[in-house]
Amino acid sequence: MPAYDPRAIKGIGLTYATTPMGADHTSGYCIATNILKVGGYVDPLKKEGQVELSRNLQIATAAVDVTALGKSILKAERAFNAAAGFTNAHDRLPEFFEYEPCPPHNAVWDFTPEEIDEVYNF
Image (tube, one colour):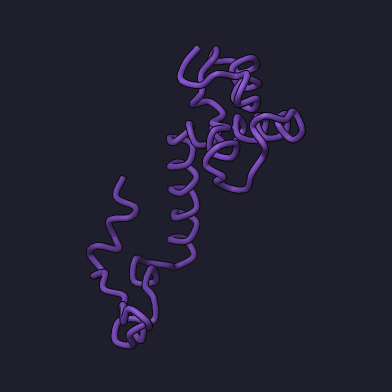
């Protein structure tokens, strides 16, 4: 088993035991919530909440792992929008974001149209 001892971090133990990939901490990274408190906190030493945590993180990880599916969905949605008459010119924010600074850092929106168009360059 990799990286983490399931006795002290019970959520990752559930992931080790149940993931179809075989004891892989990356297939449902309970460490994020049990230790790093990302997305909430589930006490790593208690059983309560661990089943749901492991399950939900395995589901989320499986969804993230299917990048090709995500690309095909975005391409289909963009094709639908193109058929409805939308172009790259519609992928822009209002101009006032470029010249009205946002306090306290006085940041402005400074992406060029060419840089914005790179988002869907895949």
